[in-house]
Length: 535
Image 1 (cartoon, helix red, strand yellow):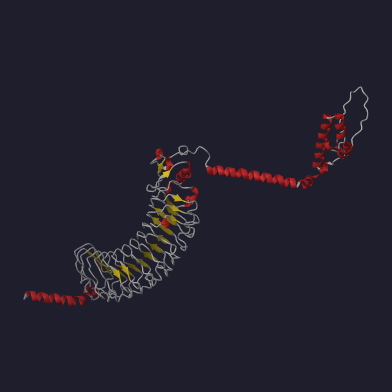
Image 2 (cartoon, one colour; image 1 turned 45 degrees about the horizontal axis):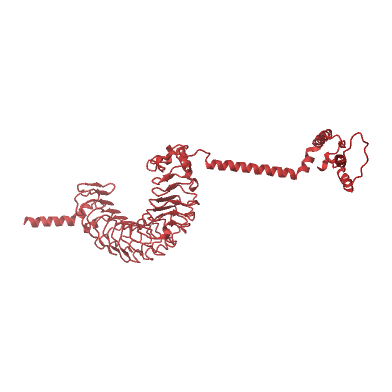
């Protein structure tokens, strides 16, 4: 009898409790290990032993957080809280979600059901949630995304389906999600993406597909995603990428293809224009590529807006062509750690303008070719952290030594650095070229220079000529050379020449000698004076 009476009392309480609690100014019951704020209308229950949703809370609450408890089901008691804008039941033991269970939560904006044991959801699970913006189902056991599964969530902006067991996506799986901006599908078992799956997501800005088993991405899989800014396909077991892989992603700014297998021969190098078409790309990450050996010149030339490059943990990557990072005026962060690169050229990157660079973990050969790096590290010590310290590995005497601590002499730099020598050589060549040009110009304008310098300079020049003529006459007195207005070319070469050919003893009278016609002609020629002004 007593048991029947107790049962009736409990039943009456369940029926009347909502109306009693809903009275103006009333305050609900607050379970242990919960914090109830009736001013902000927030209830937060930390780790505890709750296995059902409490029904005696203030029905006006707007935010309900019950995490790390043992709730196994969402029952009808949720209907008492119609003013909720945020519900967080993560890290519980939920096995499923009843159909239309949230039909009375028309003001709900955020629903977090992550890290439970939910294995399936249907297209009526979220019926009536017209205002929902964020849906988090991460870390459950969902195996597939069926046709129009979220069609009723037209205002949804963020959907997290990561860390589930999803292996298939229906071609119309995301139909109706016209406002979605962030989609997490990472860490699942997806092996193919049906080409039309993402086409309804016209406003999608971030897409996470990493840690799947994609192997390949079908051509056109991303067509229609004009607003996509970030694409993450790291660790997706991709074995190859082609120029058509990222077709339709002209506005992507961040691309992460790290930790993929990328075993095909055409990924032994990152070729020129590898990411052609991604003109707005700002960050690219290529790490853990098993076969990557070389980065060709112009590899990122078609991505002028890049500011961050991460190329790390590629154990065979040893070659960086000159110009590999050319055409990147906005580059600020370069991570090249844990590769097989033995030296870095100063012309490779604008090192001094970088805000962050890391070349640690490479088998660096420290010699005079790395002197510029040593000088840079000493001039800007803040760019080298304990984690990114530049350590030498070769030659053996420098193994384990920080590059910045090794002197230039020990690096073998006994001569002027090649860059300085090049500058000096260029200056000398330029000086010689300038002097030669000046001489040629002066020669071409010599007559004008005479006119410009005036008569005084002209008379002085004539005086100098006369002095030279007199000196010449003294040296050769037997020559008729006495005309002051003529130069040395006015002398009688015939007499001088004839005198040497017909020498006579001074006691003998000189006989006139007939002169050949040839000498007569020469006399006429050489006796003709040459005015100084014509010289």
